[in-house]
Image 1 (cartoon, helix red, strand yellow):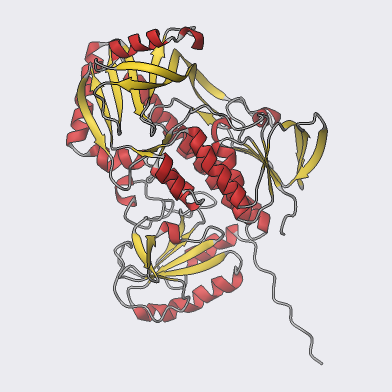
Image 2: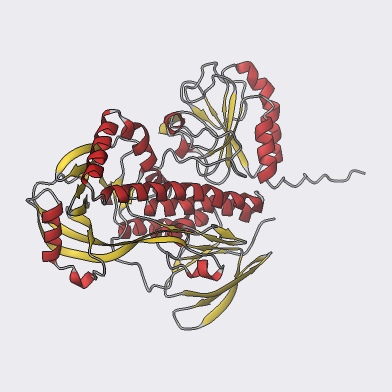
Length: 539
C-alpha cells in the first residue's frame, strides 16, 4: 500500500542531505531538520572516493566535482622521511579531495533541484513509534513545539545522536588514548601537491593532504589533554619539522582542532521504523579517509529501499537487508582503519622495519593495485547473502570488478545507449529493479520471453528490462529475439544470463536458465504483487 506520510530525516550533514535528496528525487515526501542555524563552515571530512563520486554525479554533481575537487594522483608512504611505497590511482580508483562544505553545497543543490528544503534551527525533542508510523516532537526556530506523524525516521545526527539514544541503542567500542590534531594551512616547500603524504617515524605520525585551493590539511598526534588553544602555529611547525620531510614552512592557519579517535558502533541500524546512518551508527579512525564515504553510501543504500516500500511496490521486509549490508561494510572499514592507525603508531624498531618491508613488497607484487585501491575506492564492497541478495555470493574482490556477480556492484564498463556512450551502472534506472539480459544464442530468447513477460506483468511498477548485446549496446527493448549471437565479455560462464540489478547498482540475483527460477523466487520475497486487473462484467 502506498504511504502518504513523509519521511523525517534528522541531521543536514552529508549523510542526511544524501538521504533527503535521494528520497526527494524518487518522489518521496521528505522533511530534513537540523538543530544548527545553518551550514557549518568547518572543512572536516575531505576525501571522496569513486563510489561516492558516482553517487554525487547521479545527483547532478558532476560540474561541482570538476570545479571544486582535486584529483589525487597517489598515496605516498614514508618511514623516517624515506619513501617506502607509493599507491597510484587509475581512472577507476582515483579519489578527489573535496572539503565537507563543498560536498554539502553539492548535496543542498541536489535537494533543492528535487524540490526539498532544510529546516534549520529545528530540534528533535522526542520520538515514539507504532506499527503505522513515527510520532516526533519538533522544536522550531520560534521556540514552539509541534508533534507530527511520519512514515519513517532517519537519524543522521552524528556520533552524539539523539535519535540513537531515543531508540535505546548503545554505542559500543572504545576511544584511542591519543589526542589528534587537524589544521588547514598554507605550506611553502617542495611537496607534491596532488598526492597524500604519510610520514611515519619515532616522533609520531604526520599526514599532509592537499586541498584544491593550494593549501594542505595537516593531521598528526598530540599529547594527552591537548586543547585547540594549545595548538599555536609554532607548535604545529615543530610537529611538521620533527615528523615530516624537512624544509616545509607553515603559515596562515585557517582552521585547527584537536579530537579523540573513536571506534564505536551500534548493534543494530534499525529499530522498527527508525533507521540510523553514518556517524550515528558507526565511527572510526580517519585512516583511509572512509568516514564520509561510508555514511553517504549508508544513506544511498537506505533511500532506495525506503522509496520502494513507501511507494508500495516492495515489502517492508526489504528493510531487514539494510543493517546486514551496511554493518558488513562498516566492519570492514573499522578493521582497515584500526590496522592502519596502529601501523602509523608503532614504537619498536623491529615493528617499523617489518611494516616498511611489507609495504614495499606489496607494491612490488601489485597487491595495492589489485586489491587495496579498488577496496578504498568502494568498488569491491560486497554484500552477504540476505533478504535483498540471493546467493551464492563470491567474495573474491579480484574477480568481481569485471563480472556480474550476485552481491557485487554491476561493472561500470562503458556501453552504448543509442548514440551516447555511458557507464553501465549509470545507465540503470534509480527507481526500480532492472532485468539485465544477455543471450549468447538467439534461440534462447524465445524460451526466456515468456518468463520475462510474466515477471514484467506480475511486477509492472517494480521492474524494467535492459538487454546488453555482445558488442556493448544497451537497449530497453523487452523483445529478445532480435539479439545477435555474440557474447558479452561481462558475463561468465558464457551462457544465457539474466541479472536482477537493484536501484543502487548492486546485483540482487543471477539466473542462467530461461525460466528464471532464481529471479522469480527472489522477487516473490521482496515485491508487493500488482493488483489484478479489473474486469468489467458483461451482460
